[in-house]
Length: 378
Image (cartoon, rainbow, N blue to C red; front, side, top):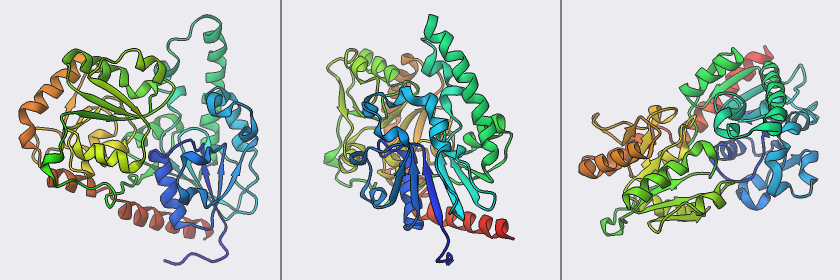
């Protein structure tokens, strides 16, 4: 397909502070539209890929606030105002990659706005307790009207989207529930050319692995408690606001490695016994990266993993589910894995991940955007 040379495209992303699943979707879209302008609330350039940095990046008034890197989460009340401040008059096509406010941009009447929805805002809907459940007194009193405002804004701004694309069936259901909108399912990309298995059996380690942002809903605390009790070795790759508190909880068999480069993460994927994934994710790129490296997944059986992991004892199993968010459930699942580890086939596990490969995503989203744009112009 050939895009019009004069077609003006804008990509919108909430904020850019690292390279996780949403940023990797943005990276592929920047390959499809290399001349696009990128709008984002703020960016920490040292944390993003070279491809993203090559785009013409435009940030909001939040970018210049002193102490932003440390305290940006506290500016949530200003995010709707900041995203609405962007002037998008010159664009034919606007594509937002949204997990917070990006889909709330104000497009012109003759501009097509498509939103690749990573999730409706978790912290104001079904995960409010995970993020704010511990707030009491004055903080709780101030928080209640803020969350009510954000819910109203989130629903009303969803009407500015011409069509939603959802990253999973799980997210499709949430879009339907909170926005009363239908959506088109397009699974995110996994770079299976980069994430590949090791065929050196002597390189396998004696450890289990977690790769996660250290945020409340990832439930890193549960994994730490489980492995503290079992004494088995757990390595955790990731950074985030919970790092100081988690450091105080780990025993010698649990190591916090911080955030590592993709090449280093890949080596840990290849060498681990299995990936441990205790959070409920809307999709979850990490379990697929591990599977692309031929490694099985031990996951909480809710959310996106139901669409990406084939559970034991099914034929072609690529992982094991546990069904209760307790350390005991994780311990039992790890014990089961050790008993049936020979059941998991490296090539079979990788084959499952290939269903979500980057090329498939690129083709699907390009075709969908093109068809929607043609229909919009007619």
